[in-house]
Amino acid sequence: MGFSRPVAACTFTVVTFAAMACSPTEDASARAGLVAGTQSGKVRGSESRGVKHFQGIPFAGPPTGKDRWEAPRPPVSWSGVRNATDPGSACPQEPTEQPRRVVEENCLYLNVTAPRSDRTRKKPVIVFLYGGGFTAGEASKYKADQLVRQGDVVAVTANYRVGVFGFLGLPGLKNSGSFGILDQQAALRWVRRNIAAFGGDPENVTLAGQSAGGISTCINMMSPGADELFDKAVIHSGPCTNTGNGLLAPVGEVEKEGKKIERELGCSSLACMRSKSAVDLLDAVAKSHAAVGRVAYGTPTLPTRPDKAVQTGRIRSMPVLVGSTRDDGTLAASGLLPLIGGVTHDSWPAVLKGLFAAPDDIPKITRRYPVRTKQEGTDQFTAVQTDWGFSCPAAAMRAGAASRMPVYGFEFADRKAPKWPGLGERMPSLPLGAYHASDLNYLFDMPTKLQPDQNVLSREMIEYWMGFMYHGNPNHPGLPAWPSATQENGSPVLSLAPGSGGIKPVDASSEHNCALWNHLGRH
Image (cartoon, rainbow, N blue to C red):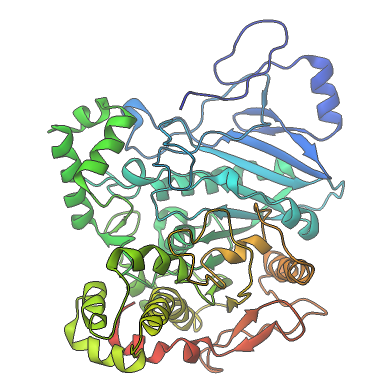
């Protein structure tokens, strides 16, 4: 895709990074609170329905040329006022979440959404990291107007490099398997230094993320480079206590996958790799089948295997929300079941062996998740994806952290949540229920429509999240009590569903057979 940064013209000519503003426009924008000063230069945003938007702000220099596979550099300063009315490009990726392949590497941009409030008190800040399996995703997809308006907070969404551009590993390459995480930390440093200009409190920053973004949030709780960059954490369907989901690996394994790409490109040096185009790299990943969406551990960025870090207390203490959705595994199941031809009584042990590669565990799993019919095969495969992949790793993180910090657990449980466009098309007969990422419909302005009772739940969830961002405790007057997930009280979680009695504490560990998965040690 071509470079498409918004550039304003006053009278004349194109400016490379910034637009020089005409003074009457600048004065009017400044009076409206739509011009903000950053350490790199001034930006002009826009306003919609009482919310201010500043989009496409560079928080780092372009990671291109010799800066490809380097830690992010500071952004280049500009003079005048830069237009910040359109988001920057997504980072290079295949068309999974994007309508087409993205090849623009100049992508380290963030977006700020702020309330149109004239109150002088600085507001809590939430920085949200997208999911996408570390191979896809885009910050501008997550619009935070309702969250900002109702919660009176400032929201930031930031791009980070994904796939081969964000997580390439090669022997001798500094920061192997870590570049996307370093991008996130650069965005957090930008927030600490600049967010006050947008009405945010740099001393009250909540880092949140979903799926790979949740894993990233967890990683940043233990990464030396993120020390003192945020104050609270929210982890949606991405606890980094699950090391069996293919998104975390020892640095040596990540580097072996990188060598596949190097060989496919016919390169024997980093200079050769950097000389290739983004198209060449994406093609090489596709042809080599290299796994490039994995964060490396055993590195300066992530020294310790994350589940071990949680268990041994090598994780920074801060208030944290950790949760998942009631049917978190349905999306994975809907993609995998057609590939394996479904699950029958006879094939179930072989399917489990392919998932876990631990034959001694298979009888224990089949006793708890028996398959007698084809429908049971679908149901039990889906249940295992949810329990092993999401619910029990979330419970493990809560249990591991609860003795050291304030922890609150949640399970989003609206099984009639609206579907994002295109979800479940490969297996339309499989009910998605409270599917992976369905909770984001209730916190962000997504391309779905909520029913009246779901709108009520959305407002209630934002009240809880607002309480957490302000005070580190999600409890809010007039809403059901949210118990802390301490080890003494059995680690209850708050189930979030619409309707009378839909919000209530539940024992998610029992419902998802976590005693079995704890025993098997699969997370």
